[in-house]
Length: 201
Image 1 (cartoon, rainbow, N blue to C red):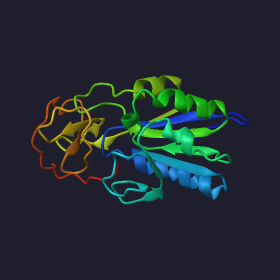
Image 2 (tube, rainbow, N blue to C red; image 1 turned 60 degrees about the vertical axis):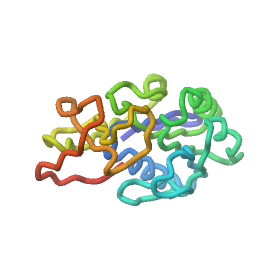
Image 3 (cartoon, rainbow, N blue to C red; image 1 turned 90 degrees about the vertical axis):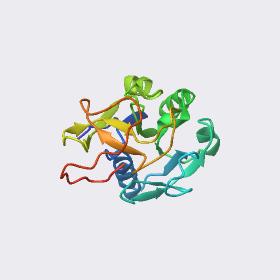
């Protein structure tokens, strides 16, 4: 349990692979803030429209209303004067431009909670996550379950033949893999080996 600071802003980063529960944890923290009567605003990249255009939605269909944005600067444009907590999902899709925005929010005294992939489909660091992890006050790394061997999984295996770095997808497009079973090129889906998979995001 974190002992959060008082009278200052800070940054929390929730990272991990696909299906590791990042978005579910983000939503959990935001809903706790709402329960505590704090003013919360949530943002998501407009490119991520897999489940809902106007909500952040986990793979298990837990959701919270959000503002879709095209650029990181849109967060500042849409920020309300009384907002105390800012949530940002799929932060890796906003690029390096999100770094000064997040820093500005925290410096103004806001609590900023970001969730996103820390590695791309090749297992390489996914900017801007390395920079966020270095400067955040609090970091949570979530793990999924490798569908091949059942070990803790921290990588996202792409199942399509695209070589583009950003390909938005969910089940059927990606699966969770451990370091040993991950292949840094697209592959066909592997049937789970009698695993109970908790389909999270």
